[in-house]
Image (cartoon, rainbow, N blue to C red; front, side, top):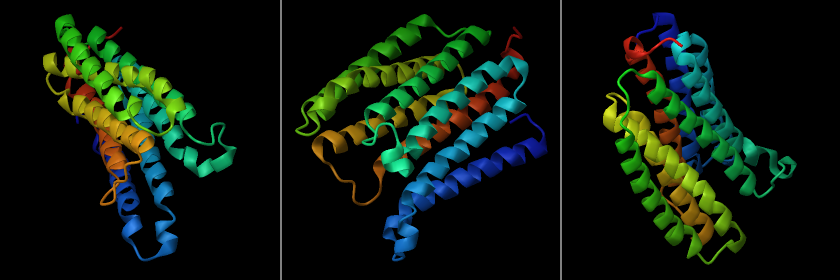
Length: 251
């Protein structure tokens, strides 16, 4: 990344904190210490908070031409982090079951990610083909609706949540579609696109758990894919912006 050494070290500290906290959150249930195992949710929520710190730090350090995109990514990550922290509040959270409320939070986060993609398309001089977006959006929509049908609608559990999950799934598919469309036409954007794919994968795994009662015993696949996906979106976007500074138009 084309930034000063001190700025790079600060961002690296946030990344190291994210990796350490997420790793701790994924392995605590295998530890013999009950006190340590009880911190699983705290570790996972803190890993998201580390990405929030990374995103907002980069938004402050970004050039004026990059700042709108950087802020949108930071807003999206912040909204997701609020959802991740909701289990810590228990019954004090407005939605104690952490379902519809979290869909709203993450849905708004995806709106921010989508706007960031739109801003990149408007700002980068090498324009992203609309055809790429249309094709990738169509593909993502087909995959997401089919996944919702099998993962949610046909599940035997939590019937009242099935249809509210559909618009959220469609919104998530838009995030994935526009990211893939941008990556096809714009070099260096594939880490972000992969991050959105992992995010979609995470939510599908979560849907299988919610609507089918699936249990992922070996490792928390939901958080493994989600955590890495969010990291790729946040860090990948920052690296893309820095790597394409010469192509940005000051507005």
